[in-house]
Length: 103
Image (cartoon, rainbow, N blue to C red):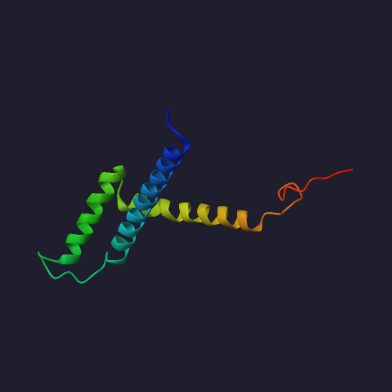
């Protein structure tokens, strides 16, 4: 039987791994977008090699391309910031403050 400490550790580890994967995907997509029109130096271009590695990593994660990912990222960011704004500007009531109402 698992105790609550191991369950919490597993949840935290899963959250950290998910966050790391999200960061890797975001930075790879932004790098590809930023360096798409660089001045290529030829066959041994280091930027082209990095772009190739980023594309291979993105294909390996979700079998998607950078173009599909770049269409989804703005939507995810908008949803994330909308959730933050809703949490920040939600009205506080007596119930949310756990105030006991006696007669």
